[in-house]
Length: 120
Image (cartoon, rainbow, N blue to C red):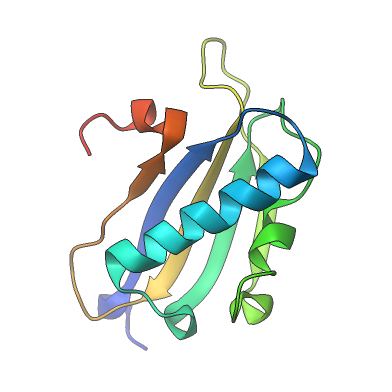
């Protein structure tokens, strides 16, 4: 793998409530959409870094991701997002590092997180 084919794909999704079930439903939805939009196989994923807004503490996004086929071997980390007044609440963000031959990536923002990137 060379630096020319390593990329980072960003994504985010909001949830309606701070529950394990809400997080377990949202994370696969986001990751599936990122993979399909970028034609990204799980074997091309190097790592994933998740953040959650401070109002979400019911579960780990990485635990939800590990339930997906092939994701159990992906190195993942979770952290709290910086709490900024007026920031989007109830939001899970991810940065996926991957190896891809194509140069253009498609970042994915779902549900209320679309407001984070109106340019996309």
